[in-house]
Image 1 (cartoon, one colour):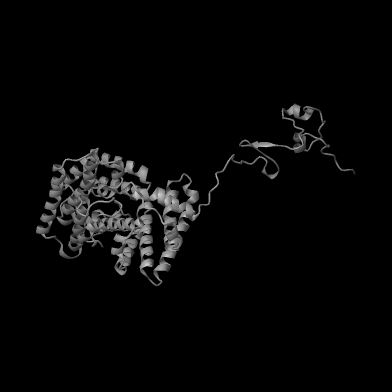
Image 2 (cartoon, rainbow, N blue to C red):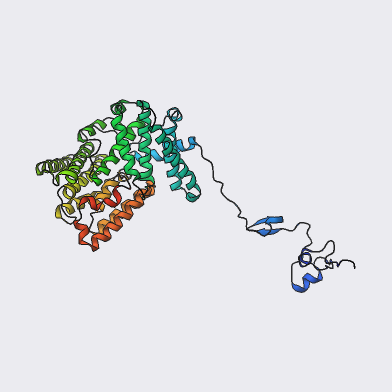
Length: 445
């Protein structure tokens, strides 16, 4: 019995699919015409999917018009990003330290830390963050592995210099750019930095060097260590007498004289932190005479700034110093004097600082560098208008810095405000319990 003929040569595509005999009528066969089906005799059948004609095994499948390629970025790209995008966010001066490419290329530990920090920040800012996250994680793990390997080797002044700078970069990565909430990575990095400094005899040499990056990193570490110590009741590495050494060089706050108000305030904060360490772990109370002398020094600085005629730039700098000075007052009242959140002295310092934060004297760049005052003062705000001003300040800063730490800060403040509104216990909590949740997660300044 001859095989049954299902199709004929030259059939339209509709009859071929249905496996029926086509009458080959042109332009449309009778079978297609009867059922209202488009009739096509083309040699190659095209199907349009998302405006892309596909054939063969791809026919009919959804194929996007364009997929942006994930660019493979090399170390040079990350170094340029670090120098031109990231460093300006950690520097108040108009000049950013230049990165010595030759020095970085010769030191794989330092190079990998720069790459990890730059990639993390660039990824956080990217619209394609999920696609780039694996590269970011790999760079961080590589930086940690190389850092630990170098730490176990023989140490010289040069290796300690590189290790310390890499350690500061890891502090920035895990404490500011992308805080790790599940662990105390920031705390461990800071403890490691202190250990390196104690072993390294070249700290004084940093202040004399012409290469600016180590000075910038040293000043960033000193500030992170100080703010962290104040929150957990630790003794900061740089005591009050060390801060004038940062005068006449190029730290993150710019070049100032050794007797500048900001350095005086940082020295006072260091003294307060040392007292806080003693109060929390040994004494229980601070000597009233020392507290009064510190309060007197803070008041004298405030009076001095009010009496001197100031230009616009001088007013901006005075406002910047005032936020840290008033933060010192809050610490003195709360941590060392054990006053409640709602005590008039605490609330007066909060109110004075909020006038500065919500005022017009601070420049945008200075405003981005008052995160620690925003944390301390903001967490003690009882007034809704003050809280609104804090939210506005954080939003303004977050849009420029692009640090995950800003989200951690905002989340902490919102939670603390809810507790202040509903719980008397929260208002009476001591300083260390009050900041325990955020103290080991991030470092803000």
